[in-house]
Length: 195
Image (cartoon, rainbow, N blue to C red; front, side):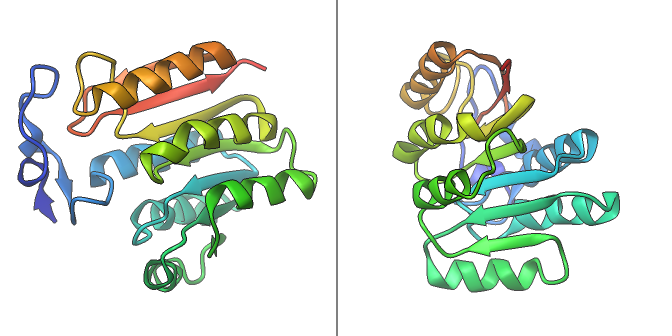
């Protein structure tokens, strides 16, 4: 693991990015991946969705807590064939399906297969331009009180990706989510569906 300061400079809201670690500039900070897994462990959802699997770091941690809990399943979407294979290897033996397809297509298929109201947690970490459309697509699948985490998205005006953070905050408000953002190096926002 590399110090996150290799990928993210200090800012007023996160002056010590060296306190976090990441294997590369694409993967989530390991401490944030552990937080995501802790949400899943606390919520014990039947169905978890992840977009942007990358190398499977977060998927593996989610899968481990689902296996320990004895309930729940993760469906994670990734389009890069190498990453799909690598992540699938990382998640062998866990209740994780690494789906080699575009996230919006995969979410649509879940909706068509009757998963409305069944997703208890979602982690959105695909391409920036896909995350708000993913949030819109996933909303009908969310169980009441479900949590959605969005990576690279801190408090607007105080984060590494301010324009993206503002886009997410505006969309979340329009869709009726409660929102909290944490000042991690790349930023992370958690939304709760009030439906």
